[in-house]
Image 1 (cartoon, rainbow, N blue to C red):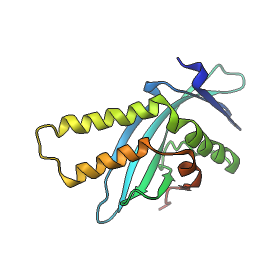
Image 2 (cartoon, rainbow, N blue to C red):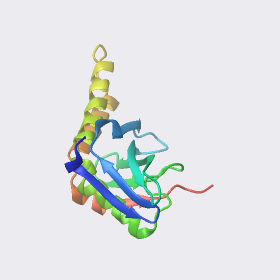
Image 3 (spheres, rainbow, N blue to C red):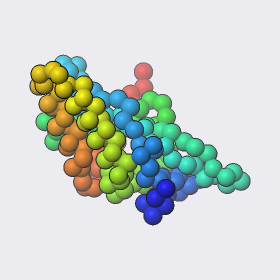
Length: 164
């Protein structure tokens, strides 16, 4: 465990402790632009510990999306309907979470490994097939995620789920 690369956020529910471990960050879904949704979207699963008062710890698993337009030029952070990394947080805590994503998460080896693992799976899946345009764009999107800077995340809007 790399305790030197651990970050904590204080929330009203306790301290959220994020550790740079490969098992703590996974890509759960990836979608490419379609006629009805012209965006690249990747859903990350983040595991962390919630240190609550009068408890030792509680393992948490929440999600968020990084969304880019079809030109890979604008970024939005999007909350899922359930188990949002930004959920049940006040505005200050939401900003602290966004800051954590920009200043720490995108620089961790676990984040980079999750993306590299997905890139390798794409390569393995397409090794015998002619690489099509959507696969090439998906690879570009994933490589762009590896190049994100702190300012890219800081400038991104956080999009809440649409209520029915």
